[in-house]
Figure 1 (cartoon, rainbow, N blue to C red):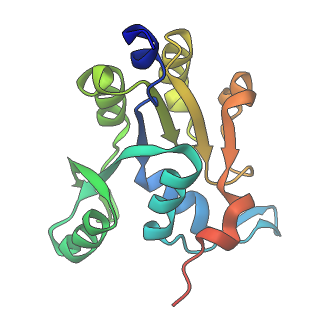
Figure 2 (cartoon, one colour; figure 1 turned 180 degrees about the vertical axis):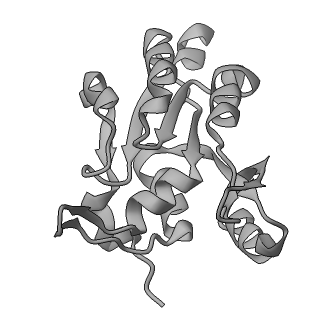
Length: 180
């Protein structure tokens, strides 16, 4: 077999880039239209989700973008031991004293620049329309594999042009739900 053939047949390196806040709220928050509940939240098992990324999409590395809160060290250790590479964003307190750490810029920077040469295909985990330009860029560069959206009820309308890339977590809820 010619040497070039062997190089071209290697498995693609796939990385996942995860907006932890969008994933967490998108799965566990109830959604209402008026007074009618249209989505019942459920608790995601992050360890199972990491395995799901490996099994279903052959994800080699999963970067989880998350706001840093010192009291959550036990959670961070659990996420690391479940196979995630954590990328922290400093948090600030909002008007109600609740911590906020918007990770969008970090996720885009890592996907489009810092990690770009290390992977062949990317899986973006978020239903947020703020990543429209990132999806568009990755598609143009033939590096977008999937967009995993926590639930179809909170998906941004800006994601409509990317239909062929979408996977909705809700449909795999039985495999991914935390069971104490």
